[in-house]
Length: 85
Length: 130
Image (cartoon, helix red, strand yellow):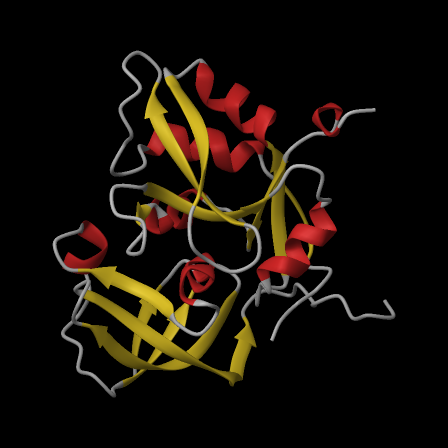
């Protein structure tokens, strides 16, 4: 699977359902590899990664990923804080 | 005490490292003409409340006051501005402007990103999601 760096904060712009990969015509979009709708990819930042399915927003010319949170993996040893921690 | 006596906190998921601040600085697709990176912010809300509202998936969060971020970029000739934009919780877009003419930057310069990244503090995410 192709691996693509993302800013997970972009989730907030899409009701926490999608992650922005890049918009065509921007440097983020221009550096994306060739993608196909429905393709499974890995998106990551400096501390975690998760598998996702590629989607294309035709109206805004933006590549997105729908994350599968069951695949989330923390790259660094930063343990999430539990409710009773 | 008035609400304005409290700091205005700005909270992000993750480590707010330089490269990811630059990467996340884009035009909001549902607020055309607003360029910046996504944050949670609201006057009177604590860092913990903002982190919970953002439903961040990351293991850590980054936080700073708006005044701290402003001070960090001011000597470089920039200023920051929070713009309320569509999104989860108390979503805002943090934009960076040239201080001299007030023009909003369409990409985040590395010197500004370095200063902003250094101004953020980090802590474990108190409300990791989903």
